[in-house]
Length: 302
Image (cartoon, rainbow, N blue to C red):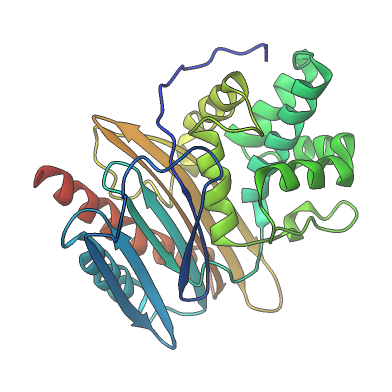
């Protein structure tokens, strides 16, 4: 439908993680849970400042390991950070300040793409050649002019319609043309990633494949953030965002899904208050590295 090559993936459904502050609550946005029919096999909660990293897992010992290591990675870092994670293969969820709002910067471009794809589905049409070019440049190169054009084409009502269908209840579109000031949370970003990787009522298979294909083809110079430390056997589908402001310094965010060799997980790591972009990138990557390491070790131990 969408005029671009796609990579077909067979994915399992999962109950979505939505967390606010230090609490975990599970939503079923895509399909019934594929793992976990009772209490989780392990839980963990370590603190970063006054907030907790809360993890649950069906795999014994994984949740306390993750919560401890994520907390250690983020403790002492400048500014504010937030994180949300799911791993389908181990029935694992983690959240840290996942309901805290942040300026979106360019990670909102995945939401813009989702809203456009939803509009084409409802209109029963394919993307035009111009829309293919705009979406490709917006995601793979993070092109702002392309985003401006699509933001105005879709309109605020179109963006909000997609957010409502997606269950992204705490995402607030930026006013006017200020898409980079959309208010997002790590929990809502994780909900979006789940929609891209499992059957749901908001985006069909062809739309999901199209989005993931673009996120897999992000240009090399922008492949920092959540792919840091990922096993070579996994494929990363990601989008990053970075924005300096006079108040609270740099916003540096990274969201992505990972699959291949039996893996199936996603994470969203958001940050603000860094003095430099590089410092914000280092904060995001510190958390990502321990997550990849701990999930890989748990998989090896099966």
